[in-house]
Length: 401
Image (cartoon, rainbow, N blue to C red):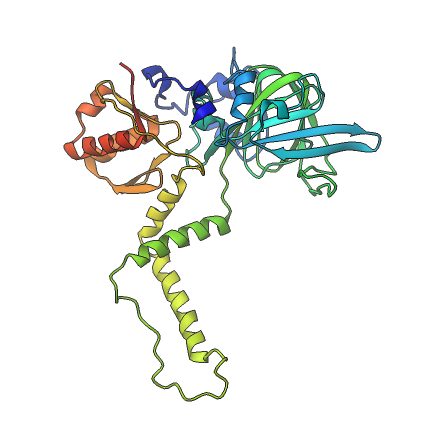
C-alpha cells in the first residue's frame, strides 16, 4: 500500500492484546476500572485523565504523517484558518496532498487530519485497541490531527463518543453542553456559531479527554502539536435498516427459482386508459412489501446480516495473503474486523456457523485478536483449515516466533 506500509512491523506476541479485566483500576481511565467508567461516564459526562498514556510517543513521525497524507489509500483533510477583523475565515481541502501542497510549518492556524490511521500504522492500531473494553462493533477508527500553532477545526460537536489523546505538544480544549446547536453558514465546516465554553484545560503529551456524544468542544494548538482521536461508530436507524434490508434481499434472490409468487389478474377488464396503474397491482405491491417485511423481521438471517454488516471492511481496504506457517501462532491483520454471536462468527463481511470447541476457539481469536500455539493445538481439522484459508486471504498473519 505504498506509504501506508512505512510504519508496518511484524506481528509478535507483544503486538497482540490480552483479555481485558473490566473490574480492575487502570491509569488509562484515571484510576477507574472500565466497568466503573462505563457506568459513570460513558454517554453521560466528560472525563479528563492526566497521563492516561504516560511516556506516549506519536504513532508516527511528522514526516511519515505527511507522506501518508499523500497516499490515495488514505482519507485526509487540510483545514486552514485566517484571522480577520470580523472573525476567522476557514478553508477546507481534501487529500491526497503532495508535501509541497501543505503549508509551511511556520504558518499559523492550519490542521492536517488523517482518518483511519489504525488501518495503516500498527502503533495506532494498538492505541485504538486500548479501548476494547467497549464492544468492537462500536469501535470505529483512530484519527490523527497535526496542527501548527493556533491550529484547530473550530468549535463543533460529534454525534459519537470520542477520546482525545495528546501525543505531542500542547492543545487547549474548551468544552460545553450543547443545548441549541446553530451552525455558521459562511464556512465549509460544521462550526458552531453559539458555542459557550463551560470548562477549559490544556492537555500535555499523555493526557486524554473523554467526551460523550453532542458535547461541544474547541481545541487550539499551543505551538506545534499532534492529537489522536479514538472515535466510535454510531449508525443511524435508516442507514442500518437500509444495509440489513439490502443484505436480506440478496439472500432472498438466492432462494429456489419459482418459489416467488407472481402477480396475476384473471379478472382484469379491458381498459380505455392504459397508462393508469391497476388498483389490483397497487394492492399486490403493498401486500408483498408487508409480507416480505414480516418474513424478514422474523428470519434468523437478520442476525447474520447484522454480523456481516458490522464486520464489512472499510472502503478502500484490501488484503494481501502472505506465505507463512502457523507454527508460532496467528494474529488478525490490523484491518480485519471479526465478531461473533451465539451461532456464528463473522469476519470481513462473511459468516460461518460455529459450535462447541471450534466456536470457543474462534471467539477467543475475535476477543484477543490472536491465537497462540497452545490454542491452535486444540483446533479441529475443520477449524484449522478455516484459519489457513484466512491466512491465505491475508485476514490473518503468522506470529513471529
